[in-house]
Image 1 (cartoon, rainbow, N blue to C red):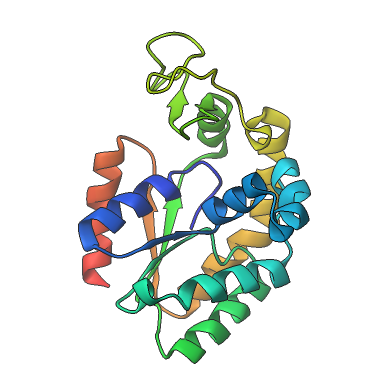
Image 2: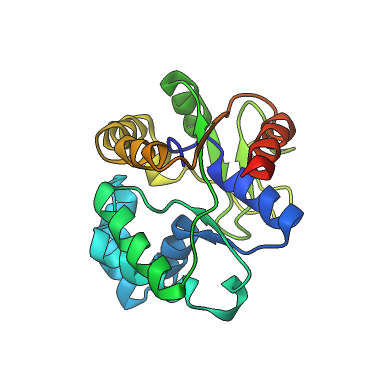
Length: 210
């Protein structure tokens, strides 16, 4: 859990590699649906492009289908869900049907100014999905992907106006989710600022205690 751009995807992928569990990223699932032009993709495209949350009923369908697949039987790492209080109830219902419980809810913390800087400088390759940053990880040639040579682009939801809107949505709709898990005694708050490896060491220490 955490603000957009705080590093949830990066840390979830590192956990995936370290624990051997599937990384279930709703953001990736939705972007793939949009790219494929599926029925789901057409329904969520306006939300993804505008930086608003996909309606809960759509997200519930996506997550239930994914967690019902065979590779999640030994566990999974959720990235991007639940993002609203109603989604907590949706996830509770899915987990109850699967007869599993969450071990921990991890909140990566950072200041909003840092998030605006991170996302504003992010560029992605439309050809191979490589991700760069103008400050922290620039391509060798400005604006060109190192891997496939395609022109890099800024995602519509990474522009400053949209980012600030996404942060407002986070404060209003997602931050209360952390309080639910705090009351349940499974919330772990991790400093999400700094080198990804340092953040991951802090994360693994908390996950180990969970």
